[in-house]
Length: 295
Image 1 (cartoon, one colour):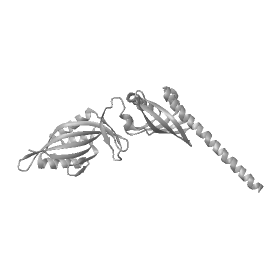
Image 2 (cartoon, rainbow, N blue to C red):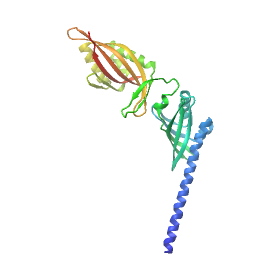
Image 3 (cartoon, helix red, strand yellow):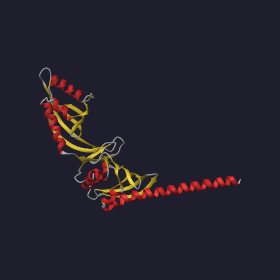
Image 4 (spheres, rainbow, N blue to C red):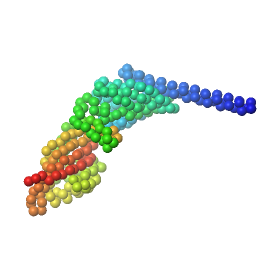
């Protein structure tokens, strides 16, 4: 009985010590995480950099111009913090709560950007008193809608029933479309191919799917040989919006007249609305709807 009581006492002491060690570790990593936020809030970039490991890995979400991976405080400061300040001069992040588990800290935050507040979760990995990894889960679509120069031109509805602002896109994307159509009318297949992404995908009016640059070239060559289509752009609207994964995408909504010539020489005209997805200044996808115009 005495031995059993002794064992129970030892186990109790061990568990208490583990709990105490865990609490102490949690407090230590939270203190480091908090120091990073405190330094950023005061604009003390030297103190902030001191909280970061030289090879700290930062992961910023898709949908932001600075979305991607960065290594080290210098790169983060130049390529993340600088554009943040340009997009939202009033940018502020306020930690609401810290939750530690081992060397990982989850931080509940409130983000002020463009005069509005949104909630976010950040994840920090702390080792040897410094950040070694950091990942944010900010709402890119919401924040970009309130960035400097952002202008809402409509509403985008997602498959899950949610909606978000549709933003005015770049006028340069309209010029890409004009150049693309000019290449079609010039039968310049090399230029058309160069303006497509490698994973190009087009959906024709009757549901035919064309995937890849070579398939697109063959589709156009066959159509041109059969009906000699000629395109005229009537209008184009550049717009940006976040997809279901939160990544910002660049689109064009376009209206075009296509004139074709039948085997008997008779011309017909169709009105085509084409949704165009762009990526890196190239055409990634086309969704075409067509209606024959009355004579």
